[in-house]
Image (cartoon, rainbow, N blue to C red):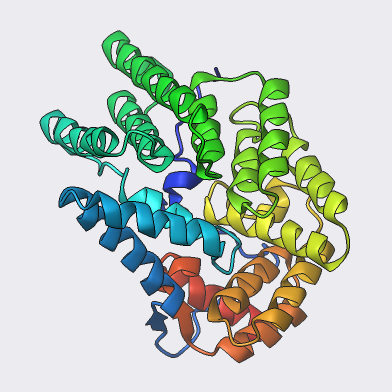
Length: 352
């Protein structure tokens, strides 16, 4: 495993762990902060995501396992997705597995025991076992920390690997159950990253996951992350993966998948400028996918905001100007990470 790189939390946990890093507007621009005060907006989608997370966390803590099973089944059956393509089901699993940074080990164990009680009460529940595997993975990263490999003690590294292997064992048990869930594959991807699965084996697993549920966006976004050079990919691997998957689908839907892969990679905030860091990415195809999304969701502030953000990074002033004109001073908190300075800088560049 490339242990000399910093750890970044996976997409299964991104909704509550993203860390804001600075973006870079095209260097040729001389940016002045725009006048006006942004209106920070928590969209209805963001509120729904928070509700799914909080409601199911309360159910777990209260031992309401019947309601948990019903909620998970409803989200699986509905295939409800957010604008960036991720299933709402992921917010459910976040709610029943996330361990906040700084939580004492005693409280972590108490939380894990809540999930184990769920398994004891519902021994054939794939949902409960996936939740436990996710929580153990989170607990593993808590033991390791986010520092460079040479700062991680041997004890911390032992706990990290031991908890990941516990998570893998739980997933192996879950795989034998009659009920199936696409989140099983995402949990498997998360463990595979931590344990350093061979790249070819990982991609074979991803292909199996996509065959099981082609619309589960996390399969694609997690693979894009795995294929970053800071992990197990070579330069260009992630871009090639996005292109291959989009071409496999083809047409407008292929362009939408391409755009959503770029959107989810951008939300990781790994790079200052997406298109400089990933020169093989196609801005043209990304823009076509976002245009198609806007046809489907013409009033979505989130789609317009991410489209504008990426247009600024790509140096497409004409398109960015049109989008920022539509957006006005309405700033989607999730897209801009609450960073009013970055929002106003990008807006000023686009409108000048």
